Image 1 (cartoon, helix red, strand yellow):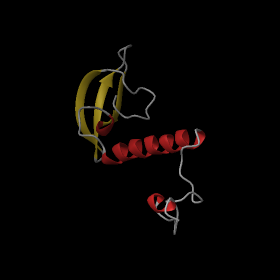
Image 2 (cartoon, helix red, strand yellow):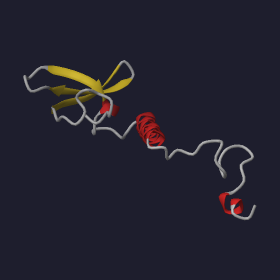
Image 3 (cartoon, rainbow, N blue to C red):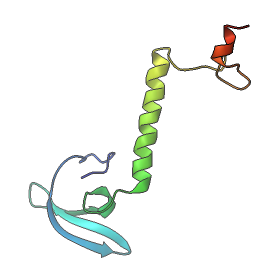
Amino acid sequence: MTHPFHPLHGRDFEFVAYRQNWGEDRVHLHDEYGHLFSVPAGWTDVAAADPFVVIAVGADNLCHLGRCTAERGLAPSAGRAGFGVGGRGMIFDSWA
């Protein structure tokens, strides 16, 4: 299971079949108890990665980075030189 937000992410299952059901590509798998279940093919490594999921993971990581830098006081603010609308470049602050 490769979908990063799925609770079974990172687990391996026994592959049974790849089918198109009602216009959607699905992968049928057996769990550790032998129960058959299916998931969208894009949630597995059978199909190419879903572009939306790839972008969503990147956006989530970017939000996490923003929170981490803000917590440490490292995030730029509009009041600091060189940042925000109309801010002067930091190089020129020492010349003023």
